[in-house]
Length: 190
Image (cartoon, rainbow, N blue to C red; front, top):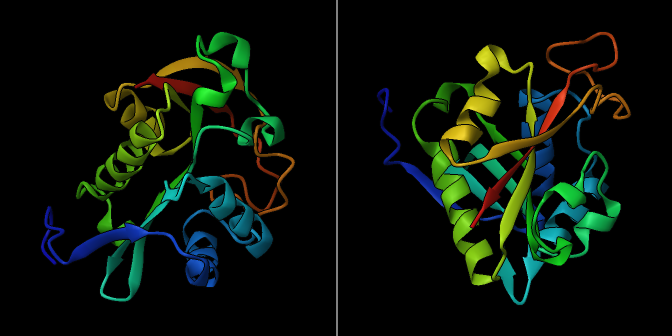
């Protein structure tokens, strides 16, 4: 695949049988043990509502090259940390959550992240979500995480220092120490 092309990449819904491969993918691209299989199973559960699924994979053949984990509007808010619903200007049960977006290093800057996010947004609109909240990784290389989200129409609500500290994983930036990165809580209105 040449630079800028992604014709061979297909986007499809995340399914339960994909979870072990998604764990291996996230171990490689975000850090060892960032997700456990049980947590990915919970992510899939929160992705589904009214017969729709808001989480997607990008595949090149059988190879996972991207993952967009998205929570449908509703019950996820009660389990979340590092959120400030009083600043959302929307009812909590009408707000969805972009949990994670990961793109394989060899496939970045090809529009795959946008394709995955657009598919999720389409489902969220069908579910009548009024907004999407997410956490941007401020220390991402060149602050690419926040820049990407701002291009998509997100704006910052709050910052949460050491957001990922409670997760016992090897942050690609902070390892071997615990992650001390800051999350920017962001929102996009639909």
